[in-house]
Amino acid sequence: MIIQMNPNATREHIANVEAIIEEAGYTVHPIYGTHLTVLAAVGDERGKEGLYERLLSQPMVDKVEFILPPYKLVCREVQKGISRPDSVIQFEFEWKQGKKQVTIGGPEFVMMAGPCSVEGRDQLMECARIVKKYGAVCLRGGAFKPRTSPYSFQGLEEEGLKLLAEARYEYGLAVVTELMDAHHLDLVEQYADVIQIGARNMQNFMLLKALGATKRPILLKRGMSSTIVEWLMSAEYITSRGNPRVILCERGIRTFETQYRNTLDLNAVPVLKKLTHLPVFVDPSHATGRSDIVVPMSLAAAAAGCHGLIVEMHPNPAKALSDGAQSLNEEGFQILMERLPAVIRAVGKIAPWEPAAVPV
Ligand code: PEP
Ligand code: MN
Image (cartoon, helix red, strand yellow):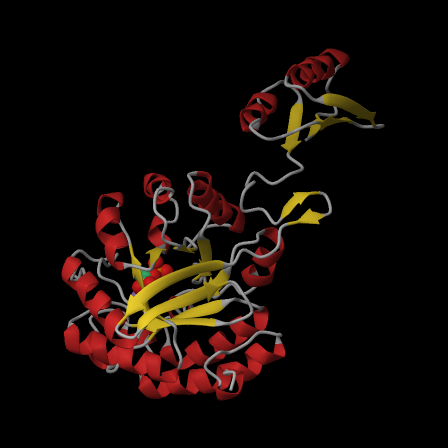
């Protein structure tokens, strides 16, 4: 920890801060400059977050900085020079032809696709058929929908979850669906293979704490105005409560630009891969809000090194009950799946839906 004293600090002010640091178990190394004094406090920073506020409120303290990041479990670096390898998340599900395994965070690029909302059996089965045909591994679909307007379609709730389970059984696709309320955790985990936490709930701390108790992997979307550190702290809430299986999903942030719904922050992908060992996904649908730019931004996301994408696809976007403007139709999805492998290969990963990637 580094404490920067004000240039007007007296010997007494400095001694007061030194005493607090020593009492907390640190050794102090003062650096007396010509204008100001800096105190380097050496010791284990874990569990000492409360000290930050205390030091900042002392007279003549200008700045307090921790050396180690406040997120510990999701941090890539354990100690100086020692890094954790990428987390690989595996799970299994059953469908009509037996068991299937899904691996997220490994060399195989994983595609999750499907409608924004589950609207009914015909719509969902058609979505499942299409996304499976071109190589998706997971079927996405919201049964509980976080809508800006209370008058918009709110989702089919349990009926939607049952339809997702039916599509999984029929098509062999793992189910990704959103959980909005901790009271629905028991219900949603019965049907979901991966539980999605939406942008609006990234800092719903009671919900995050509840997720520590489930064995299901969590797809944690970035809050629309959250910093990367805030996002990692949300992941830390889940992992510190006992569920280490968190996947981060960049879904665009709010900026001043109005040409698209959000701004896809692709810088986040390589930055996250440095800061954390968790798998990183990108959602180009919510990040753009425009189906006409979903394909190029998906390619860009793959080039940036993400482990997979979650994309909205609807057989008839003009009739979608939510997010039609950003949903690819079958043709768009086919184009995406045809173009992605070249980029995935270029960054050293495998596109398992490519015929050449299937072992003979
Ligand atoms: C969604 O996936 O349909 C959704 C609502 O996403 P987000 O939470 O990123 O807005
Ligand atoms: Mn949506």
